[in-house]
Length: 603
Image 1 (cartoon, rainbow, N blue to C red):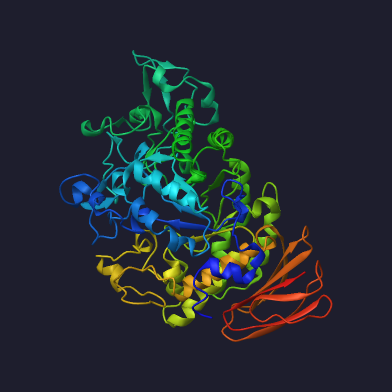
Image 2: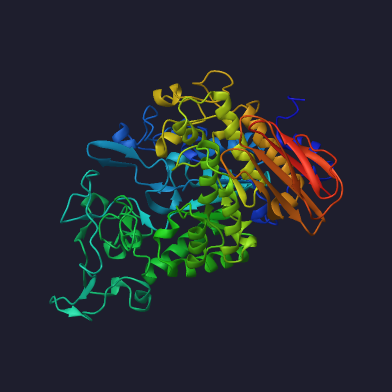
């Protein structure tokens, strides 16, 4: 039986023969029915070594390529990603989220060190694909190949900032230890001035939503900013479209501390913060991201740093992009934003204020870590699910949240649990990682797998230390760090469908795909342990089909039993995963092994 449980396709056939054809066609499928695989493109697969240096000459400082350094390009590209589509589809994945493919600033030099734009968030040319990743043709071929397999492509996009080009006369913008301090709007108002230096409309602050009703800056003679911006001579035309090269389209206020007004108007770690209140910037960004839909048939956007952009920008961007996509034959265009806040009420508020259809569910990620890695009480899950009513649209919006437990910024769940429990045995850590994914797969929302979790990657830290290549690495750190359930040499390629976590995730995806109620049903909390580890039980209720699904997870290191009230649809119980009894009336008893889960269906 173990050999049969290799791919989601096999498991789906076993779980529901009538639905073995798999998910609905990608253009007809709502986001709630997807399973997403998030990949850092440079770290997935190297399909063409000739583009490793992006067509540039020289060493790492010129090309950004140094596979021994975890902060540089390693060689992954869209050719390689296309070659691994069978591997990805075997997990039951129906959508691939890729890091921004745009041409990036190759290298940033700070305090004598180097870091490359392999991750995609230092964009310069927003209309073309980075040559390091294979260029435009390779990206188009990848999207077409994914679509041929009924897999959507979600593109990570940035509107908040560009790569670091603009410098300030008053300070050294290349120093990480001494950044240009943020200058507030109150102390340093942006002012419009005539050529003789006289103020025009002295009360005009230049920032905020009111600015959307005044002329664009390119029509003005001169502007006084908080800092005096300039562009180094060698970089005056590096950005595309051309309007991005004009410093007047940036806030120029210095580095953000990510609180208060500087969260919106400050530079994100020295990156050039776009003046997203300006009509020319709003129009320009909408045109850019219409281009990607028109040229490549992209199925959705993940919005980087969404909360650091003024709400009025999103109020135009979201409806115009979704309307354009619909006109292009993409009726279920996906948009979800990054709001790095793990308080459910705050996430709901930002979703409403920004006017977003969905956000990444940092609350679920925090609850998973707290209850599986820190021994927190399970009532945290009750609070998380109750807060779903706070989202605009309530439970309907909550079902569209992009749920995750590992990512490229915070690090992998395995690392976060390991950091909290340095002496934990590897097999227990692996079981906790699997259980965390199970809760994510069967809770409301759209599960997002982070590439490499299915191969037992752990990592030594967050951020760049959590972006290991799945192909053979030249990094000593990546080759010597812990990896759970490793199959074969640790230093080689890691594309093993036989890995226990790969098979576990494929099983979860197959069960979810076979039963619409596990994707679209409402959530009803049944039980949670009030003190420390234990049992968490909730139902997904499918009123349309007259059935319910009981999910019981055991966060304890010993088996636990429970009898819960399951009043609701259905009369006969069947086991989808684990041991499920016949039951009597609405009272239902189950026993769950240590660090494991069961899924029982009543119809």
